[in-house]
Length: 429
Figure 1 (cartoon, rainbow, N blue to C red):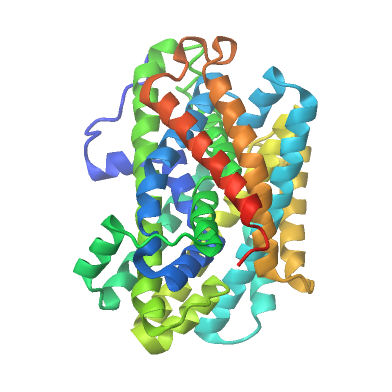
Figure 2 (cartoon, one colour; figure 1 turned 90 degrees about the horizontal axis):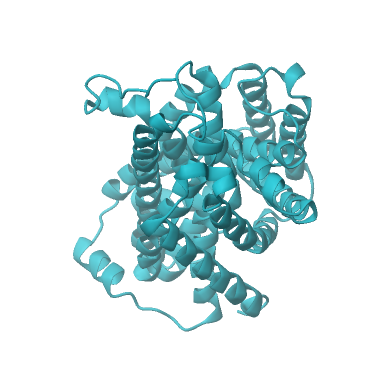
């Protein structure tokens, strides 16, 4: 197999957009309705004092996601498939179970937020809208091949610009905001510590690792030219560069949007004494009398767009993890008849997530426990992933070294510390 050449006029905006895929979609999906709720909560409660966390998470997130993407591109297999080949089954099954729990809860919260967002815009039944969104998303994932579905996901990333636009509709005292970012008023309280942990946990999550690795595998399968780099090392230079550019752009985009969501909440809600936000829909509703109807409309519409992007990522990541852990065929490019376990898990995850909205379970408490589960799962998954990325049996000559490796270990250390803080401060106010 010959080296895959970059497209002609690779520096043009259109050519660049075509080469962006797994990293861009993963980064955008990180700003899902649940993430919007978290960012809105910390911005409303602490103002500018948590903006600095975005500059902490950005390089860490880039490094970890590059590792995930490279594992998929080099090996030709998803993350949990690789973990199952190189580590004890009991450990991989345990992490898979934790991932399922966290992802289903997140799915439920995102589906509910989308329904609430549409109700804010046009009235009607939030539950009916939520169930309709879940059904449409599930049908798209099951019946449309990934090669046709991926461009649709790229288009949905545009919805995140709603949160950038919202800031410019609101009147931001930029000098004060920048000062608060660079010289934050850190509060030595349990609430503030949990806010920082929440931002870290929302930004760096196991389902994002699974999705990005799997998308690299999907693109190998969908291409007549790409092969796993272990078998075609001559494709390595261009492939590694593309993954890094794609991931950097995707994660920078994700973190910029997160920054603007926190800033919007700080400059509107916190500044007007609205400190208690329970959901992304609450944040949108609270914006209406403070920042105006247009800001409210942008924020609420953004919830729906980001939800449509996040649902397939959460459900897909769950299915990739389970199918990979049990060595079953997987992939959105495969037909349901040829990947029954994969699509079965995807469908069940979507149904369970949707059904959570029909129960009396408090969605905020559910998201809290989802964060706890993610905190438990993230650190061991990151440790195994980084060790795997330097395993020659798995990676051949493409072991991850240098700044990416060290930043990944730093991210793991910080996430471990965050998990400890989370457990120490649980139940404290």
